[in-house]
Image 1: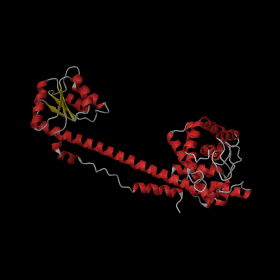
Image 2 (image 1 turned 135 degrees about the vertical axis):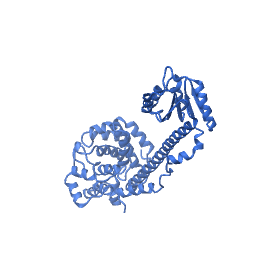
Image 3 (image 1 turned 90 degrees about the vertical axis):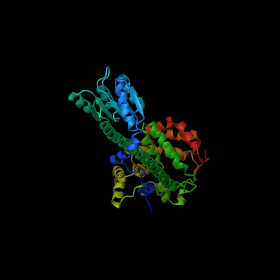
Image 4 (image 1 turned 180 degrees about the vertical axis):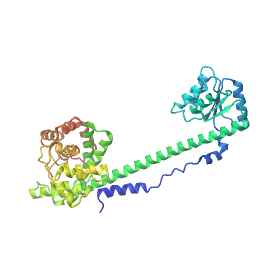
Length: 409
């Protein structure tokens, strides 16, 4: 028989067995360079304050099959054009009025969206410091004017090959991230379904709709949100709360469905469902079980042995949701803040649902009476802080009661 941890692990393995990530292996730079025909479709931006220089470079590149050009003689417009068009490469003059090529390079390298766009500097300057400054600012290459057509082509193709490889890696990474997201979503769904099936297994013998566990989870989430928990923790509490009564699997039907009041021996058996639930969710050794009964705090630490956050929290809730604020609850008669907050939250959620639902031994109480009984238990049965949070969102709880009702109220 599977315990809860094994069931959740099985769900995870089933999800992972749906298949390995399907993204193809990334290409090498050499693979990209072999596809030189594709580079002819690259958009090449040429920035030079002399139109004749632009025309000469364009003519060289057109002879080699390049057709997609973006040009400007106004260096002040260059950055806006790069940002709007995202060219594959920029051929950039250095000495221009108003905004120099070095200024443009610096702006591009400091811009997250533009810094990976390669730039080849074309300049008539022979100052070695200018070359060093250009390379320091991230220029991919540096060519002196007048430009040699063959050298221009070789350097352009090399830079475009590296750019194509970077683009390929970026797309490959995006595909991997999307597939991981989808697989993660499938895994989360599988875990949620496994948890809900386990919760319903315990509840089905007492409530064949399974709506009780759903409602208690939703009520617990309402309280957690009202108390200021973040969304991730709220979702965790909602899932774990659904397992609060899984221990009813071990309670005989004669007691579970008895229409009248339980005698003291029967009630002791019913109380055992807290420990049964904890052991189903997170089985312990005999020594650990003794320590748990000896000291509740040690027991809470032992329950942390599972690797699943949901099952870890569910074990705590299963063991403590019948404890009372004044210490008169069961199974360990712990009180006040010694009761884990999640157990105190589910205590309110569970009692509200029990009061507002029909049971073999009682009819469903009207909502007004349910709320009155809860208020009467403030500071004795319930943590006042937690109860007040529930009462503040009682209208939402009543809506949940209607949405997942069983016709009893």
